Image (cartoon, rainbow, N blue to C red; front, side, top):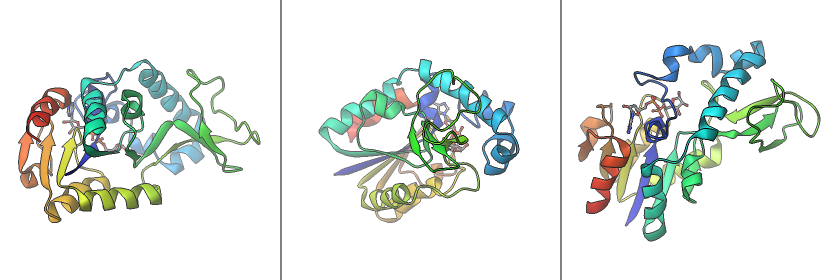
Length: 227
Ligand code: APR
């Protein structure tokens, strides 16, 4: 019985990490086109890095939520995979090992000159924008920005897992961003039981066999009892 879980910012909201589109969402304060695009970075890498430095500081102080921990525990006794849109690394910090990061990881950096990719967990950053430890070139966050393609291997693996799922859980995503938002429909189309956990309705809700209007931790506690 393969369980596949797609998570979004909502699962980290309970860790104190702001979501993007919620009431207190990040996109309320910042215009994504000003920060999360290659053009914005080319135009003003310093401002983009100031935003990421601020998010890294919030995430460094955050602890995995009960929901992150419940998924890590469930992975130890069930055939379970997590596909996350989040870049905060909280699933791994909770102990999950089978995690596919569709949008990259905020703790990874990539050099736009020599292509070096590595983790840099410095909080706060020593210099903004940070420089490559290999060549001194300009670093960028190794995350997927609007208009960029997702990491090929992660995306292929995510589609494969979704098509093999017996139970597909969607937790804490507004299902507005593709291709991630298509994965629940891929699973449903291949006969999976589709369960959604979100305090609000989303475009996925009409397709769900069960849609729980609860937060991630409370909703997951209920679902785990019956899967
Ligand atoms: N538990 C579960 N879900 C919650 C909670 C909670 N405690 N609090 C809020 N939510 C839900 C909101 O109702 C919303 O549907 O989490 C969802 C957050 O949606 P978004 O902020 O749009 O985040 P997400 O869906 O992950 O965004 C997808 O968009 O900005 C890009 O790359 C970024 O990965 C991100 C992608």
